[in-house]
Image 1 (cartoon, rainbow, N blue to C red):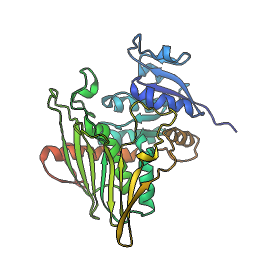
Image 2 (cartoon, rainbow, N blue to C red; image 1 turned 135 degrees about the vertical axis):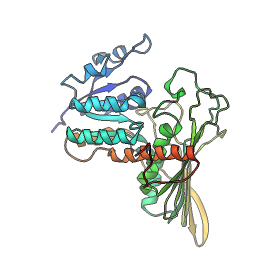
Image 3 (cartoon, one colour; image 1 turned 90 degrees about the vertical axis):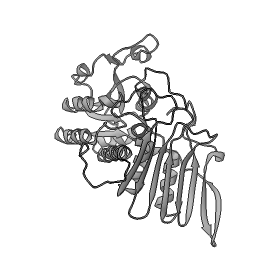
Image 4 (cartoon, rainbow, N blue to C red; image 1 turned 180 degrees about the horizontal axis):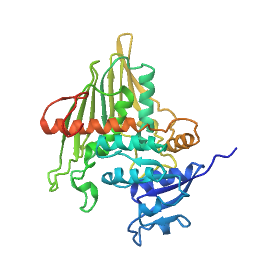
Amino acid sequence: MASKPYNIAIIGYGMSAKVFHIPLISAVPPFYLYAIVQRNPRPNDDAEKDHPGVKTYRSSEEMVRDPAIAVVVVTTIPTTHFELCKLALEHGKHVIVEKPFTPSSKEAGELITLAKEHQRLLTVYQNRRWDTDFLTLSRLLKENILGRVVEFETHFDRYRPEMPAAGGWKTKPLPGGGAVYDLGTHLIDQVVVSFGLPDSITGFSGSQREHNPEGVEDSCTVLLHYNSGLLATVKAAVVSPEIEQLRFWVRGDQGSYRKEDQLKAGQKPGDAGFGIEPKSKQGILTTIQNGQPRSEPCSNIQPLTYSVFYSQFAKALAGEGEVPVKPEGPKDVIRLIELARLSSKEGRTLEVRDRYEGID
């Protein structure tokens, strides 16, 4: 029996929509790209020209009144996420929202409540949960290959010492912006998925660039402390002059796993070979054998690709399982980000379960 088709509308027509969502929507049969909201098309950037036959709207308010639309995907800048998700949910649409979920955990909580009240599905596009190297590492943790993990490092470091050209929203200090909300969202999410919420947190958020007139937080280091003795380090840097950037370094009492960054410049979901690495790029697994460390390449598991996110969402719409990312998890990540920034500002470690003025 064929799956029920679901018409999808995308709000926003930037890189997120073009690279991460439209190719995946097109690859999952139950979904049909029905409409795109693009406020200001240009001759070389026009959704209507790029996708003939797809309806285009100039405003989200007009789009949500279309009864043919079942799912709305929000790919606009973080400052707009709360209002656009709220608008879509109140008009009876299911919602997928790009990370970061919202600039504040309070807003995230309100959207979760609203989705339940309207009996609509709400999920956050934390696609890095399906990265091949993270899934490989997750298998090692599940099978206890590394033993009791004491240190978990996860990095997204780059060498980009110059500020990007002015004009883009990422060059401005906006709510929901900066390194800890951008790349840090993925990194913290992977730690929480692996180990749960930490007990305390220490954050360092600021700029590594010499010229940064707007004061954008372009880099961050976040330490997640667990009472078990585990220390998780989340790091996103823009001044890291390395040929191969570190991605993971995980150490336990029975072994370690070290991995360089996997994504190739220019590759997109749907491209041939996306997420598949040559053996030379595999991680290194070190285990203790007969009392001595022994290292060998660690084969990656078969990549699932990010299309799994949309496949699982289709099943959830059909009542055949949960959404791919329950929104409560990303809400917790946003609160950890709030705590990390507060920790950086006050120069102290904060207890995660305590309440703080301005956050709770």
